[in-house]
Image: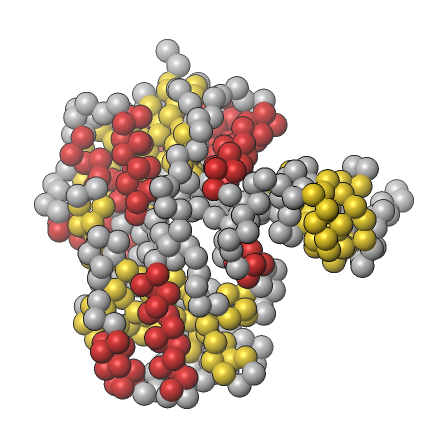
Length: 457
C-alpha cells in the first residue's frame, strides 16, 4: 500500500478559510480533504497559513496574516494565554465560546447517531479570575527564577504574571513566592539534568472563606531558607493559613509527590459549597470553579427529582462534594472512591457537617457496585461523575445489574460521555430531557455537562 503524501511541507504558505475549531481550540483549514490545524485562528476568518509541522494525514500551521477577521475575535488578551494553552479559547468572545461548547456535544451525538437535545451552555457572568487553585512551574531562564506556563506541546516555560483565569489573589501570591525564591537564591528544578530544588508553587484559596494555602513542591527533602521563607510569606500574605512543602524526588511529569510536610499553620484550608463546609488538603480533588460547581450540583440534584425517600449511589465520590450536597434530599447516600485520601476527606467532611446518612467506601466503583448488588442494595438513583476517560464497560454492566430508575451523569469530556450514553441506551435506558452543558472552565476548551437517563418501562 503506497504511503499517503501530504499536499504541503514545512514553511509552505497558502490562503485558507477557517471552517471549524478542534476540541483543543485550534482553527481548522482544509486543502482538499487534508486538514491543517492553525493556532490562534477562529471560524469565519480568512488567513495566510504558514505550515509549522507535517504528518501524513494532517499538518499544523500558524497565522502569517489575517485577510478577513471574524466578528467573534477577542483582541483584549495577551497572546501568551493562547500559545501556552492556559486559556486556548480566550481569542474567542464569550458568547461564541458558549456556542462552541454546545456544538461540540451536538456534533459528537450526531456522529454516534444519538438523537438528543443539547441545551444552550450555562455560562458565567464574569468568566475570568475564577480558578481557586494554581500549580505553577518554577524554572530558571537566563539565570533568573521565573514562574509561568509551558508553551503548548513543549517544555519551554513562558514567564507569565497575569493568568487571566485564576483568582487575582492567587496570581499575587505566586509572584510574592517567586520574588522570595529569587531573594534567597533558591535553585529552580532543571528537568533535563534532574537537579535543583523548587519544582512548582501551588496555591489554593477558598472562594468564600478566603483562606489560602501555599505549597512549595521540591525535589529535595529539605527546603533551604525554610524559616525566613515562611516568615516573609506570612507577612506578605495575611490570608495564608497553611504553608506546606510537598516532596517530589522523582524524574516525572507528575506535579505532586506523596509526602507533605507542614511548615506552618493548618494541614487543610476550609471553604463552603452549597452551605456545607469542606476541608481541602494539598492533594484533595476539589472543583476549581466553585461558582459553577454550585450550579452544576444544584442542577444534577434538580434533574434527579429527589423526594427525600431515595437510596442513592455516588460513584467516583471524591471528597464527598456530590454525596454531601445531596444528602439532605435523600434517605441514604453511598459513595465509592478509589483514592484513599479522598475517602478519608469525605468521611471527615461528613463529620464536619454532621451528616449521618452518607457512607463512604474505598474501592473501584464497578467492583463495589457489584458487591452492593449481591448484598441486595437497590439504588433509586446513581450519580456518575467520572474522570475524563469516562466509564468502564464493567461499571456500565454493574449499573445494568442494579437497574436504578435514574442515572445522573456529570461529564467533563463530551467524547467519552457520548460513547457511554450509547452503551446505556443499549442496556435499556433513554435520555430524559435535554443534555445541559455548563461552562465550568471559561476560556478553555473543557465542557462539563449533566445528562439524565431513565430506565425504560
